[in-house]
Image (cartoon, rainbow, N blue to C red; front, side, top):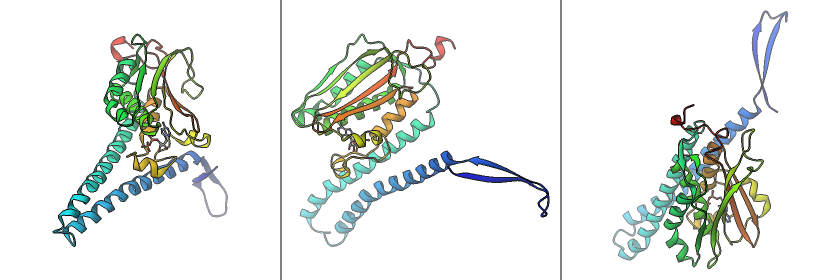
Length: 284
Ligand code: ADP
């Protein structure tokens, strides 16, 4: 526990009366540290591709100025580094936007099966290139949730993309779901009513148990080199967690090394009006 002491009044130097207030600032100090770590990590993540990009530019402007073969070789790498920086900046902006409206309740009625199917269609080519099938088995008649459609798209985009990325070549990725009577204990709010449950499952290498609680930390990766090589920013699950927190939902990863992983999403139903504020036209 850390404390800061603020003297409120000091009558005189003879020690006649001294009034002190003691504030427990453990949480504040932890948040300050997290923020400083985040800025350091983000800067480091950006510096690596930036240094590499500048190195190539200097080479192409200097010793390799007239070397057509070097240009052919370096330009695609430079493009890749630029794209990596772009993805990182986009994810950082997403996180900050989500944080800014974290306390306002989302007000769209979102049909999740539709949304997931659209995202799966967009990832079909990527899955095919790996010899994976992407099967969405969600009843279109599942009840909708109150949500922010763009943010929820980001959640499922990140989860499905990870499942394809980290799934083993030639194995299926499946999305299943339904209504459950109650969300998991990690769901915020005192009332955990009926929820929509969506499970994104892959048959990849899986994740060792000790990593599971840390997966949603910004820039946390089980295998840094592998994530980078696959074009990951290390922010996808942090974004998913923040979005689901705003929706009063939860993300629960399960995994067995060698067997694959399942990322479970829980969202309160739109009909569960106490779990999340109703939209304005519903009259509250
Ligand atoms: P990244 O951009 O690195 O994929 P994420 O935040 O999406 O970042 O995921 C964090 C880390 O969690 C990944 O680097 C990876 O180590 C692990 N991870 C996420 N999804 C899976 C999965 N389906 N299978 C195995 N590992 C995963």
